[in-house]
Image (cartoon, rainbow over all chains, first blue to last red; front, side, top):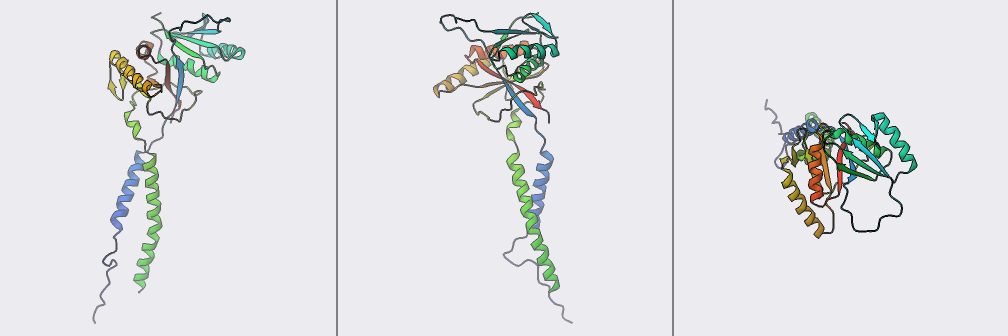
Length: 138
Length: 141
């Protein structure tokens, strides 16, 4: 009995998709494995004190909150506070006037994380007028 | 005849799956972020959950990294403070001709002493840049 010739499943001119599907799955696997969750970052704005332009002194002296950053804590207007005290006293001052200038003085030995902690508290209390000055060691 | 119908049915079912696979690939290609390669991920940023998220990326922004050892680098290239001042001065002069400012972003490790960050800030001051931003972590992934 003559065998029926099996027609090839792909005739001339048709595209063999098998290899393309394999490549597509490999690409997909690569991107799935290399994708990773990204940290959400924030930018905290500060100003550096600019050289004074010659001008008449303001009739009302600006309100300034002086905060000093030490290696192990902070002082607000020469009053020593810890992290909880920092939030408490700054919130009291912010309740009076949020446009006050916060003059931040960092000692050389203080870790940068302390400065960020202070800037974070200022951001929470909407104190936006921040100026960072640096001083020498303790 | 029956085999031909089965083959046609199999080929037809694959089409939708290929479409879905290509859409997934396009999604991941579009969401991959190549700029992260220039960021030094050894720097452990301090947490600041109350800071505002900035979604606007300024292409003229200068990102300065300060590692936990106090090394100052820009795009993973370690620079001395004097060279940083020169670069910032040049960047500011170029930006001033176009009528814009140079935003400076400092990414400092939380453990580094302020002395190292002070060098960067002094370099910015010497270059005439008065507005600085500090990068912190709002949410950890």
